Amino acid sequence: MSAAEIPVDVDVLRDADQPLAWLDNSAIAGLMAIGLRDWSTDVVLCTNGPSELPDEDRAHLAAAGIPVSEQPITGLEPHGDGASITLSGGAPLARRAIFTHRETRQRSDLAAQLGCATLEDGSIEINDFGQTSIPGVYPAGDMARRPTMPFPAAQVVHAASAGGIAAIAADRELIGNEIEAQGASGAAQ
Ligand SMILES: Cc1cc2nc3c(=O)[nH]c(=O)nc-3n(C[C@H](O)[C@H](O)[C@H](O)COP(=O)(O)OP(=O)(O)OC[C@H]3O[C@@H](n4cnc5c(N)ncnc54)[C@H](O)[C@@H]3O)c2cc1C
Image (cartoon, rainbow, N blue to C red; front, side, top):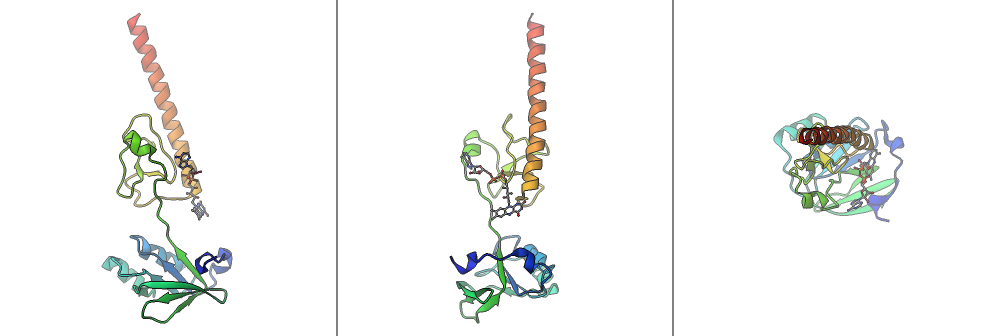
């Protein structure tokens, strides 16, 4: 088991003002690190190399008292109840817990095979009714989102809700198709 996999009971961290780190160099790194300030006044954002954080995010992080460490990370070691981050050319950073962000990705190429339009990160593009650019294809959950949502919601409740909406829309489409077919066959008689 690596230091990064040491299980931590998240409930003991909540509001406990423990030293925490957000390890991430994605577009939402600043936002997520600031979110951790709800739990602790001692939060460090480690980007593991040069970051392209926008100036606005850097200003928000500074206002929240969150330093940004852009030094490359060369190791993670167990340390007391938590872990120590080894930074290239810097002092080790001991933290009670280290959080990170894992991006979602398509595991199946089914949507690509069907020709569904996708967003920049590979998520399948859907509209408010869960419809894709290909009629009759209704993805739901982590694999799809509306363009107005900047990143996948990636929570069970959202996946279930999207599935429910897609089911209603698909059902309506099937009923509509049936009515149309009946109309066409009636007109042909
Ligand atoms: C470590 C971790 C912790 C999380 N914690 C929380 C949490 O506390 N609360 C919360 O709400 N959400 C949490 N989430 C997110 C949540 O798990 C997802 O948002 C949710 O499971 C999405 O549901 P889904 O049905 O879209 O996808 P999934 O649950 O990923 O289901 C997709 C299924 O499709 C299968 N599959 C993939 N490709 C194919 C194929 N080609 N053929 C057949 N089957 C295929 C996969 O094996 C999988 O079973 C967590 C996620 C992770 C990774």
